[in-house]
Length: 385
Image (cartoon, rainbow, N blue to C red; front, side):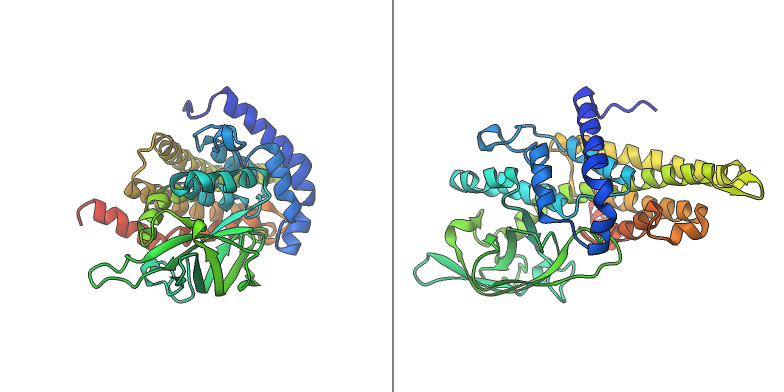
């Protein structure tokens, strides 16, 4: 089927990303994988390539393009090469929407030039130990000082992607207690400078997959956050989080589709090269049927991911549609990658093969951004159930 989501400019960007991966990522990726993190300097190379500023207005140093299609291409190309860009995806996909939607002009002048240049890498800190998907149950507090000049931030966060390298983190904390009729009330968003006294990075978590993407525990002990770093209005943080979750869930859905497509490519190449009983593995009927079935599923998930991308760019992607795309694409990817790993035999279980890394990287897609069980709840509610 003809694909219409990308034009010539997008395809030129694709080639730029593909060349960048070949020269700056693939030769070093095994070293980063073993270390469990990409070097901080790598983010400056991404910034020089212009990827952090695509969706930033020109007056702040960006390209002024309002589209997620360039992020989609990055997802496809990193998956195709069996690599990733560490925690930089959080910087753009999670951090930038909050700045664009909530920051004052003064804040944009302070934040965005450093965002584009990679001088300040951003992360988002929502999840707390013991709360998981129940964001309204968060315990971190940010109390306004008596003189009204700063908030005193206390608490802890966990599973914070990009948390090790982050220079500024959007921290969700309670500035007021919840109301009896509204547990979500009282949460605010603070753009916290990670160099502030009392801010500390705990363990870099040892994950099953996405090993080059740094994920950390954060702790706050009487951190004095200037009131000038409040994003949006006090106590409306939960509402803001809800507004941005569809784009986050689209990103997960699109990444999952890209991983599934890459898995089919890896399995096809491997089975064409691998000989068993004097014949190429790809020549066996079972291999052909397995790959054909996987390709059909990838085609379907691509259609869903592309449709969600178009809706997101038009500002029309609803929470239920984003949940549906995430649910479908991540479940399909899990099945496809598992079947493609099986076609690799024992080599599919060896980390030097990209299919093995895809297998472990993919698993978290059904957990973060809201578990797939939560996605089903959102879809069911939209159905009137």
